Image 1: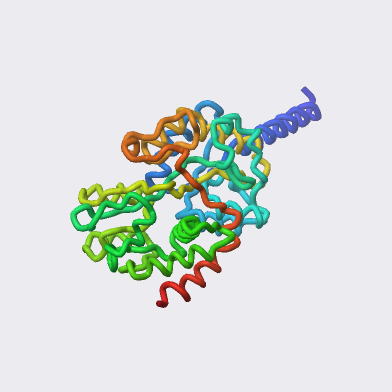
Image 2 (image 1 turned 90 degrees about the vertical axis):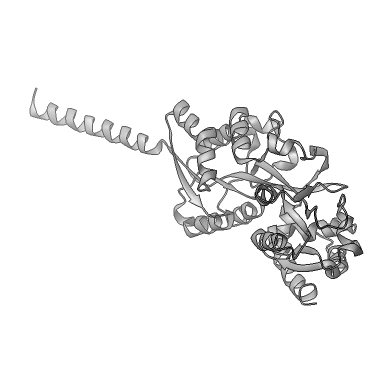
Length: 339
């Protein structure tokens, strides 16, 4: 073999090796999600199986909450290296307006056919669902609440823990607006109902931890608004607390999956489809105790005794919430909590 040929072969081998190395380096998907046990549930439900079936490594990045995730994406906007983001609708809308997300294409996700159309937005697709109700101390409350209107009952004067407008992206104010015949765009009835409720309020809380301290101390007998997960945590060591699924409907919401702009979009959609597969939804829903997003998976046993049917779920319009939330908070602080 001549020196020239040897050099050519060595160069060709190096080129092929370099290409294969680059290709291998690209066979990775970055998934930003909640950390801790949430990450453990995701690993068991779909990450391990995805890696096994595709040979593609999934790198998990943790965020504390969707707003933290949004900040991380904004900070790396010129070099985005996250492919799939587990988030919630309002931060997803902000991220898309910011040019960080692609318009979600449900046609790339076959399992999207098992999800209600109202759970698919231009910014994301539902991963799982949750609902809100009323928490009450059955040993102290003067009557058992069964409908949202019961919150205004004069027998609850000075007994109700009421969320502030900033809690859970303004969902309680949205509920009050719905009860008064308004909606996210027409929030006047919501503020009118909030003023009706002031006499029954014993505290306005920003977090469920604050709310639960008030309930556990006996300061409040009713928590006006509660996600069922927080209720389950509270009731675990406090069986006197019960959860009411009020009439005429429950306000509900979902956490979702967004595809971040970048070169891995086909792979990101494939991963999203894994997250919405029947086996993944069953595993994650049962471990995390959430309501599955897909129609062919049953509600986990801990929720089956009180979870409402889908027909009772009513979802906020997150696109409007994103534009209104700060104004709601400012007006609430001025007109309701300053009273």
